Length: 157
Image (cartoon, rainbow, N blue to C red; front, top):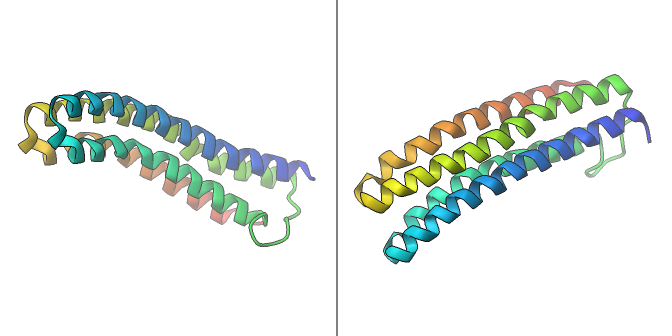
């Protein structure tokens, strides 16, 4: 196995692991807040569940980038590409935006979702407005996803 493949696999793993960790942290934080609300008012379950799920998207984005990377280097349904170290590093670099931003934004989106769950707990009619706060954090995860996909798909293999 070439050093280039090792770098590319490290990139795919970083995208999946880091973004997945961000989502796990964020969903956990929001879930704690949601559990408290549901204890007091079980009728708010659906609304707070939606808020809890929002930070989970970063993990999905990281997984998507991981799959795109594995397909790019030929490990999904093809033969493994012969990558030189520089190409492997380019792919690794392309995976880092969603990995790092996914980790950070997942955590902070979870915190913002928890605050928005607090809004729903007190003013259920403000659900739509409350959703906007964690959705703003999502913007940066989407930008990182776009950056990673553009870089990885444009690295010549």
